[in-house]
Length: 333
Image (cartoon, rainbow, N blue to C red):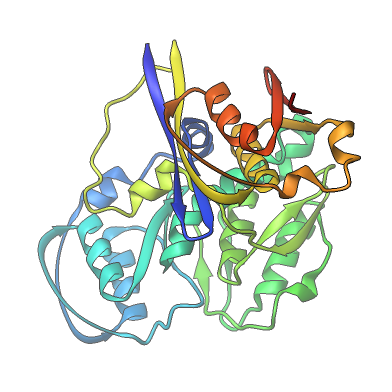
């Protein structure tokens, strides 16, 4: 039996979840990864060149599209020399030199703050997962791929509004995006959902899709955010091609470390990443003190899902019943 491992890393007051589920979902909606492009050798010397100019030249010479986050100063000076260095290594070094990160998103290279580079694949996967309950017809506008462009001095709120309007989707609160002016840009074919996530991440925001998938509300990114393994590994210079795995006869295992985290928040994170429907017993919600605010600590290594849930819920005096994708939280004995 093959085993897929999922890991939750505790950083400060938050926790990050890496799951085989998240990995497969992220890949299932992506184009072919940029394996060949990232392996292409590059020879160049830059001294006193602006980062934005360097990335434009890399994009043109290596035939890749690079998205530089709006929060990154494109006028930062670059001093670097590369001799037959694979593009992946070039991006690693440029990112490291400027305290940035990079990752792939559906055939595009994103470069920005390290936290955002780690999160962007999960933001896209989370948005896709929110469409799982709607019909194929309702999902279609969000999943439609299209190559788009805009001229110099375009406003991102206008770009976003136009994309959504064309798909028949309402942008509920366009004023949540501050005024900004962007340079001209052309993107490769991307789904609407990936384009929306990409545009909003530079404002530290994402799209909350309505239950009927007909509207998008701009909301702040809520952290701690689960991070998919696919996105973490794309930012590592030690990343290598991994052997393929069959999806048959797979056991998913988890590792989790928590210290004084609200049990409701932890359950919410797990449910979102694992596509679980969570039902809290009415008897719990009628208590004077909301059990979801109880703080829990636990340490699980390579446990299955029931073991993981027990470790999370038991310290709060809770039990659970798990049937397929339905998780019911119950009072403990």
